[in-house]
Image (cartoon, rainbow, N blue to C red; front, side):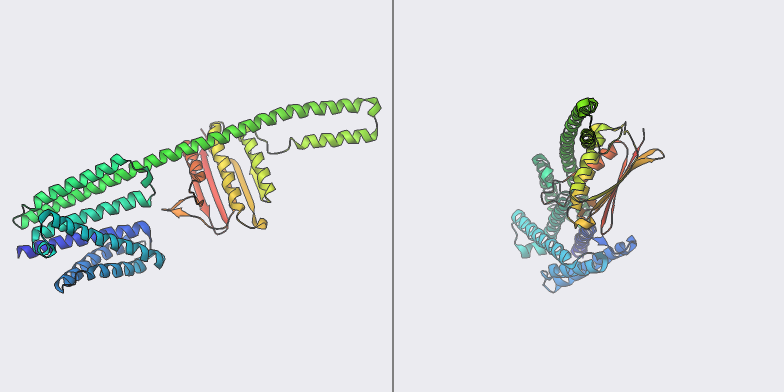
Length: 434
């Protein structure tokens, strides 16, 4: 009787962990169909009961290997009923989950066999071995799941250091050692329950350790991307400073030329109508060089002038409604990061659609105690997202334009919002005036 109760408790724990991992995985990967979380809580407990009963049935019928097939079919049905996602994607992820589960089962059995010296039949008959096997299986599944969610899916794998992986490995070995030594000393049902609580404690600590590792990896990656942002913005700023210097020098030269034209007009021997017309034409050509966007902030003037010209050369219709704002509290590096990347993203998006549909609209002004920067542009409607965050559509995944803009806005306690429909992409930045 005690063995029967212990096996049931072990099975319930194992099935609960399996169901929980499956549900959390689906929540991370797919969009729920229903907003009421109670529906998912009820479904979760129903899944535990269903998995336990079916697993017990397969064991009694001596066809335990059917359990994996059942889990796969059940997961596919659950996806279609509870989540919004394409069947192909859910099929692939469910298959991966089942493969990992089978691998965890086999690995746990082999590990138990190596430790105890028993074969599979003996392991399944000995309650201590059954408990040891389920402990190994649960720990393996939890650690793999947390690594998959916290590190691989979020794209932080490359930022993990070797010492962090070593720490996780050492902790797992320590947990297995403690579990093994406690399991072989089990004499009654109370020992089984105690061992299950120890297992739960190790699982919680394992989740925390792997989660912290993922956060550390994310911090390393954020730091790396921030350095890329600063370097890119610094190069852009240097470029625009150089352009502004050249522009100022050209203004001096053009000013001198206009003086010379005035002298030419005053010369008696050129005092003819034709000479005046000629000098007027030259003066108009010189004035053209001074045309372009002008505001109190010189760096912004250069950026806007260059980008407007670049857009118009690509047959992009540009509409602007801009107040003369100095942006006095924003340093030149951050101002360059914001506007250069807004322009680059908008121009790149317009280049991917038909010429007649290309446009960029810009609004810059003051509303109450905020500076408002608003860009909208036509685009092809394709937005690539990962966990509700827009990411680069470049194959190299090195485009960090929106990340640069967001980081620069948040530096001044500002807000950064992105909206889009099928044809228009919009970015709005609010900077509180200091």
